Length: 138
Image (tube, rainbow, N blue to C red; front, side, top):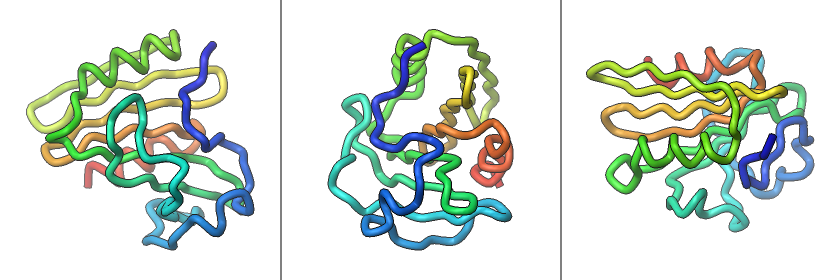
């Protein structure tokens, strides 16, 4: 199975990124959230990213949430590209307000979520995925 080409790997230590992180409001209980301010990661699959949030539990990276401006991104295209890269089980859910595509790999989940204002890509430990998705929908 292939990996997505991002510099952040789940399980990495906070120390690897601490000088490139800015504290932000914690997204989920018992985890610390930071915005990545470094210069190493400005685009993902040719999409300009708006913001990258790293979510740690006890200084271990558990989730990466990449936000894109919806006007510059395409949910269907991003879903297809991620599907081709991961080549794993996927499922989708769509209604008038949100589109969600979930990919399940051996070690984690990758979610693509489109709301009326933003497009998100989440790479997460399965334990935290639903809490993070719910925080985006509230």
